[in-house]
Structure formats: C-alpha cells, structure tokens
Image 1 (cartoon, rainbow, N blue to C red):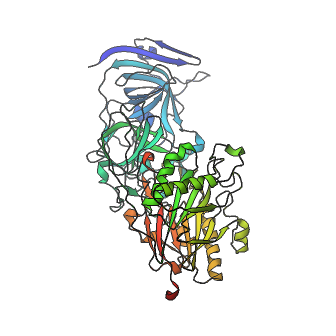
Image 2 (cartoon, helix red, strand yellow):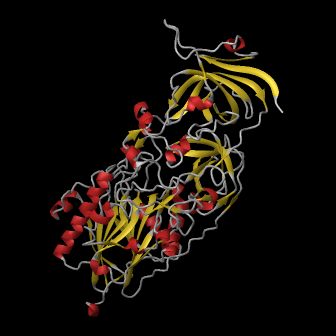
Image 3 (cartoon, rainbow, N blue to C red):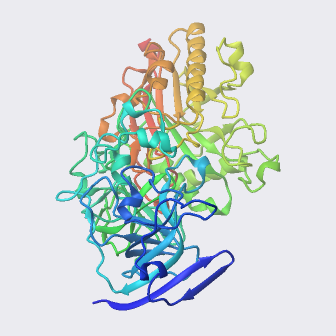
Length: 638
C-alpha cells in the first residue's frame, strides 16, 4: 500500500528548506537533459541515470563528478545518509542496484519511501585518502523528492546457497598488481571479477540489501562505540570455506600461510555491524563459535572493510566457551616458561578488572609458570601523562600483577624490567611499554639480566645493532634450576599498526613494520648465534610477541637461520590450535617460543586460548599466552 505524496527537500549553500512540488520542473515539461554542456559558461544540466548506470561495472562510477537525477526506494536511513535501491535489479551481478546518498543533514525521507534524488556523484574515501581505504560511490544530494510512501523494499540478496556465495580464496588477483583502485585509469584497466575476487564481489553489492544466512561468529563481539558492535562471521556455518581444514577447534578460521603473508586472507569472512542508528536491538556479547540467526541489512564500507549493517534484530546462541587450563606443568627437571602480551597494563583503576583476570590466568590458566615473559607493561601512571611525561618506573605495575597472581592462588612472584627512555619504545604516548619478567624464586634463581641495547648488540657482532630503534629492546634473562642455566630472550617486535587494509584501495596492501621485523629477527638470530659460539650447547629460549606469523620467512628463515640454530615449537602444535590472536575474524599466530637444540628433547608447548576467542568483557588481553614445558638436564644426564 503506497500513498501519493510528492515532497522535496532541497539544499543550497547556507540554506536548507523543505518545499512541496508536484514534480521536478524539467520533468513536468517532458525534457530530457543532455549529458554535456551546450557551450558557454553554463554548467551541464543533471543527467537522468538509473542507479546501476551510476554505479557502473567497477570500483568507480563512470559519472563521478556529474550532476544526476535518479530514483529508487529508501532501504535504510542512518543520520544524514540514506541507502537508495532500485525496485528491481538489472540482472547484471557486476553492477550494484543501490547507491548511498549523503543528504547533508537536511530532513531525510523514511525507510520505504520512493524518492527522486538530484545531486552530484562522488567517490568518497571514508576517513580520507591517507587511510588507503576504497572509495564509496555516493550522491551528494541537492534535493530529495518523495514520490510515494510505504513501498515494498527490494528483496535482499542471499549471501549463500541459492544466492551469491562469497569467494573463498582471492581478495584480488596477483596478475592485477600493483593497483590503486581510487585512480580512474588504474581502476578502469583492472579486470572486475565479482565471482572469484572478494574485493570485487562486495563492491558489486555496495549499498544493497543483503541477508547473511545462518552465520557463525569467527571473532568475538568488538565494541566500537556506545551500543555499537561488530562481529566477523562465516555464512551458513562456514559451509563454503577454503581450504576445508581452515577452521580452528573453537570454530574460528585461520589465516592461511604464505611466506610474505600474501596468500588466502579468507575473503569469505563477512563483517556484521550493529549500529544503533540502524539496528533495533542490543549488541550481544558473543565469543568465537557463537551462532546467529539470519542477518538482514545493507552493505556498507568503513574503516577499510565492507560490512553488513544490520537493519533487523538478530537472535544469537552463545558458544559458551570456557577455556580450560594448560595441561603443561613444571616440577623436577622440567621448567615452564610462558610469554604473555598483557595489553598496555598499568595499575590504574580502569585496568583493575583486567589485572584480576590476568592474575587468574597466570595462576590457574597457565598453572603458575616458573618464568613469565611479559610484553606491554606500562609505567605506573600509564599514558595519563602523555608525551611530556617523563615517568617510566613500572614497579607499581609489576607489583600489582604479582599481587593479583598471589591472590588467585599462585606463588609470590619476583619481577624485574629495564625502563626505556621516555617515549622511546613505541606504543601509547606516555605509556612507555617495555618487556618484563615474573619468576618463581622458589623454583628458579635469577643469574643475569641483559637489555639488548644497540651497544650490547654491537659488541656481540650483530649486523644491525640499531634494529630495535623506536621499538622495545629485547630483555635477556639467565636463570638457574638444579645448577643448570637457561636464558630467555623476551621480545616485542615492531607493531603491524599502520598497515593498509586488505580490503583497501592499494594492492599489494602495505604491511607496516616489515623491514623492521626482518631486521629484528636477524639481530636476535645474530645475538643467539654469538651466545652459542661462546657457549656451545647453550639453552636459549626466544619468546614473545613477534608480530608476524609462523609461516613468514622472518620466522622460517631469518630468525632460526634456516632452522640451524633455533626451532619454533609452535610448528608442532595441531593447526586447529595454532593461533594466539584474532584480527578481523582471522585467527593467527603472533606469539612464539623458539628454542636452541639443547632444549628440543622433550619440549612441549601450548597456546592457551584464554583471550582471543572471547569478548573484551571476559578477556584479560587481546593476545593469548603461550607456555612451554622444557626439560633442563640434571648433572647425571649430561
């Protein structure tokens, strides 16, 4: 049932007024505007164009920069943005049947209104050009004319069986690189293949109504604002993924291996965005493996990703994950060593809940390792002081964590760190993150602590002693148990922060810190090689947040020297358990434990999934800890 009511909202510089018209004047006269100016200084009149023609078969509109008149049904309204879709499709999967309209804050029509829009087509880059995001085709509306109310909404496209299944392997073809999809000449020459390439698949649905059938969560709910959240999913419970064995034991999906991390980034992941402007329900707190009812919404793009912006309430069934403790324990001639990135930890009130969780994790989940290598320990006032703050002492932070472990039933840990120079170690300005240690002095004795500064690395003959400039210096600590020494090198390699989006405009996408991590891998290799040269058979553990994956050549070739002096224990972990972090729905391994040959016999390792599968309200960090059980030989076994 529709009602005839023709009203137009117009926008002029400095003036926004609402007027009622019977029809646009030139249409009432039966005129058809030309696409080009007739000459002189007069601007070209608006072009009558359907939505599919405005979108075109590609990433950029062929009418970008032109004034147009088009019509459709409003399928969603978000503040001063509306989603406009043609009542019927054109049968071409390469052209989207919808377009986003920026109304500029004037009064906007309601969902279900049939409207005519006059405005300028533009390619808008959310967040600005510096983000390297894709551009979004939209109309900057000058006038929005309501032709009728209560129209039926176009049927949503099903992203699954019986509809259009997202590609499972490629985001963009290697033979199309390099390319910047915001540049007209490059975008036009780029083959547009929405059937096999993820970036083209979602582009071809830009602004349209879609339905995600029977999704399973491959990320926990991420809170991105007040009453706003995001969840990464797989359609139809992950029925269509490639390869078949990519799922984790918790029902996530693993990032696929490639020496340069240029392989299968799982384009079948579909992000669901729950925004109170569009979504009528409350955001559920879900973990990986939770299931949802069909999600109906409009396909948008922001922060470097396509997303289904839900417009109808979604039901969910929590996975009920309850991470159990590690089976690994120390005692006798076995020592347990853990690595744990504790996410900008400081002793301030806002981190008190996390501090308690971390205490339980270490005492119970990790069974109180003999040595805990920590990353992202902040100074005692956190980042409150900002860049001008010279406070770097982290004693209060480490004491609070040790207290939390003891309160959870763990041992009374001793602790130590080496404070960086103010604002020299990266991370949040003023936070002064650094590597630090907890250790159980009833089990192991501290022998020596060495911060691997440029001077120390230079003395050891390291080829690039400045490799950690602007990052965190590794902290090497030698311990003794039963009269036998072992050394743990605690690392936090350069961040991936600043990488360009996988679903961005620039390909190959930029992986921030690649050169730095390669140099750091080489520096640690050189230092360990120096230790082994001075003390053949030395027991060395290289652990920490290395910010790269077990399959990259940083960790398969550079750090272990082609496997000659160190071995990554994580390679022995079953693939479905081999991860310590979930980023945009991809489960991946950033935290590692390498050992020299003397520690390989009997070595065992366990990535303990205490955090990565869980929403922030239930986790202690964004990383999972990794714990290793190592046999330290007794004198009669040497």
